[in-house]
Length: 215
Image 1 (spheres, rainbow, N blue to C red):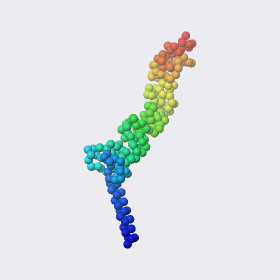
Image 2: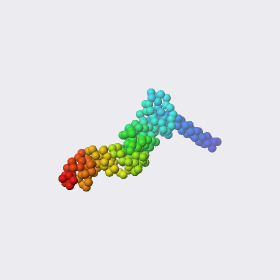
Image 3: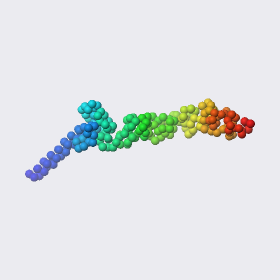
Image 4: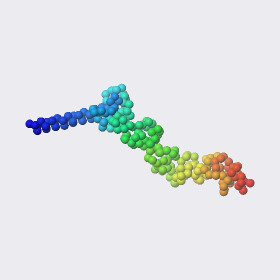
């Protein structure tokens, strides 16, 4: 009789545990009770419709809305904060299920963005900038000619626009543009270029005053 009572007690406790767990998994989280507590399942997140209507069951990836002041399930379920300051749906923290937004102040920078070649920014958060990113191979291929006014190292020689010798006779670099060079040395006073970018070409540049060609 005592053994039967013990078994019955164990069975009742087990059943109670199953019911409790089941009820917890079917419970809802909202802005009013956002700390989970003992009656809510922290493994399940739910949407709180605007206007405080009935809560709707959802999966782990659902973002709380409506009257819920939390922005992500991890906020509600004590999994740590999830910040999206630039509102691009990518979070600054690594525990939020979207990867890490490497610049949460710029909505154009996140793991879903396309790398912009030549802006000096890691747009897609892969740790590679401009020509170092394989997304820029078409624009940065060594077989591509240098375009002298687009701020991109088109030919992949680590020199951009007028700093690239390929642009030394391009109009963008001979009309007061900065060629990244210097005037007054070698043939720089007779090459028809504004080598130092000061607006003066060849003998009109004071740097060439000592050049034999300009005496």
